[in-house]
Length: 384
Ligand SMILES: Cc1cc2nc3c(=O)[nH]c(=O)nc-3n(C[C@H](O)[C@H](O)[C@H](O)COP(=O)(O)OP(=O)(O)OC[C@H]3O[C@@H](n4cnc5c(N)ncnc54)[C@H](O)[C@@H]3O)c2cc1C
Image (cartoon, rainbow, N blue to C red):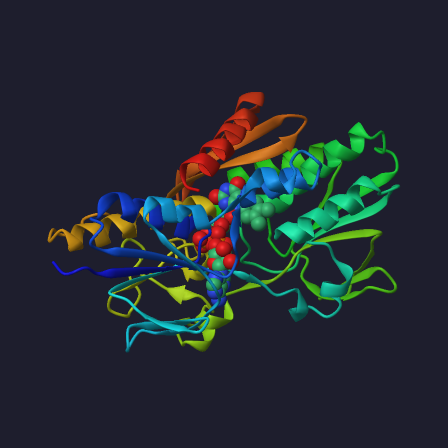
């Protein structure tokens, strides 16, 4: 078979896995090309440790260029247009043709969509924001700390709750327990609602058990950065001294401008094959929308981007070898849940189960925290 080109857009979790698996499974006659606007990749789950001084950025960041040693062509530029009819992608100055396309461009953060939010809030959802937050946290003398989930869906449904518990632990270690009032406001009815009421209640108890105020079904309307006040849609006003927001998320502009997104605002895909409605085009990870049998979307999480990437890469490899693509993404996932003081919980389950996801939470312990540490090390060595 003449050499084919597989283009992978995005060098985050999904893109890294897809590129590595493809390169391992297919002959060097075929090109594997990875495009990302950034020169390096950051292991996002570890941003939670960065905001409490447990990691430095260089420990969790790796350049993408060395992937070329494995035979993956890496191009650092912005993707500005995807044209499935012409089977081309505009990236920087180049127009690249593909035989298969994997879109793994993640989710963009859009704090500007809530009046006042971008000006007022810290966000640890990207590395520079996480670093700025750590500076603010380490110098924080005490006062009201509010963690605000501005909208759903957002990446890693556990992350804001983990951040609350890690910050609580950090402030306690600094002897500030009587001086810091930590609370979390969310439009969700319970933490991690897709995982079901048992998991949500367990997380709620963990958070509230630490004295952190949890305020569900609170939808933000605007923020007053000067008066340091949040205004919610129900008319409630809440003051803060340090505001940490999970900003609204949306699909990257290139996906929206190229007409790939559906009603949900994300790219619709077949839940098992991750095929889009365009021939030879797959989408994986945060940029997709997969509606579950329970009527809620599959959460945006690296674990799903990872397994979706493996599924797609193995199926493309099978097709190139002339066999049938038989791999199916099964909706299974897991998540370490950092609790502070060196402990963590672990949730895992089947999100494609009917009539609702079957997710269980294991008893928290030190071993789950060390599990996440080992997982971080493995990830950074294995894929990058
Ligand atoms: C603080 C935090 C903690 C988290 N913890 C966990 C966890 O414990 N477990 C878990 O499973 N998930 C976790 N996640 C979520 C996880 O990181 C994401 O779900 C995962 O990274 C999604 O992978 P992806 O490949 O879809 O997108 P990403 O990993 O975000 O990669 C997208 C890539 O596309 C690139 N890109 C975007 N637009 C363009 C463009 N126009 N041109 C070129 N390049 C572009 C970006 O630079 C980026 O590198 C966490 C996330 C955060 C923020």
